[in-house]
Image 1 (cartoon, rainbow, N blue to C red):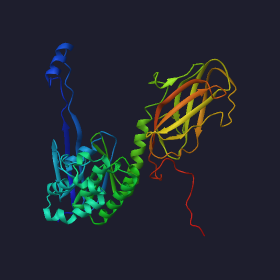
Image 2: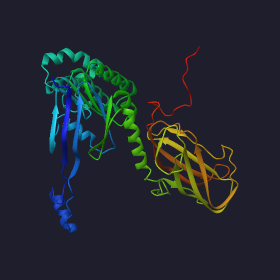
Image 3: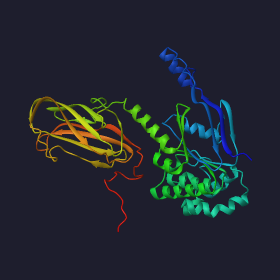
Image 4: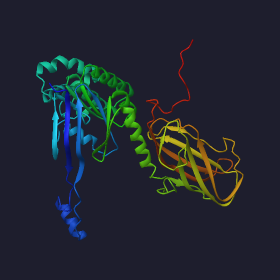
Length: 408
């Protein structure tokens, strides 16, 4: 018997783009009004010559930026779509969580969908009945099991889908970001189940942006970029190269100036205006992508059109879900600005960025010496990202400057 579970041989996938040909009467009329025909765009190659092999019982993760081709690759492996060229070989029965509740029928109840999904995976009714109670118990949907799934919350939908996928005992399990949905308790439960399935010699293929979890769960990572394999190997090595790549890419998107501000996100009387905002790394290079526990500096250039005595410069950092991280202020920090007139610059230097991986928004402000009158205010006008480091904490908001010890 062969020792492989999945093999891709020079696999490519092309998606045709819509051209200028009208697809409806409305589009035809619009084209006549505009009086010109748009040029047909080139087809999109989501994958280009992918070749790799995954052994039976191996847990492999795929990483890459949005649009790199990871999800397309999984759908090809799960036989949801066909490749444009190349050969795909899959040895064993597949269970796939490629979309939340994929395979569920909204008009059917949870119970009916459990049996439908099992049948689609090739199970006999007796086999589904044997695991049905475990599926329902694990999913925690309770009495909702006899209600059409169109009335489920996204969390309930996901829990039942995940529970079905892991209880039908497939040879190969595909997971595409499904663990990003649901509360923390259920996510932990899912991770525990995946670790248990690994011990049963199941082949598991995962796509996720949760790099810390990928490192913990996977024996090997494959990095895909623009439809091609860049690197395959030990998780720490691949993640080190991948995060370096994403950081260098994002550093090209320099947060410089106040571009994009409008009347809804900026206000103030204008005696002092912030004319440029830069986020700098430990080497003084501007960028939008930073790592936990490394230096970061927020630099504000300003222009005072008249003499202003001891203005207060302030910041506020918000996580993408709206939770405020902090609100440092130059006055509260004891900084004596003095009287300013004309151009100048102030900096907020962070020795060790304690934020855990997420996207953050930055508010900046300038007030009078009493902190009452607003000269300039940019409300959550700037964005930056904190990314994976080799040893971050997995969940939460900040990494505390602390160490573990065994008490004597």
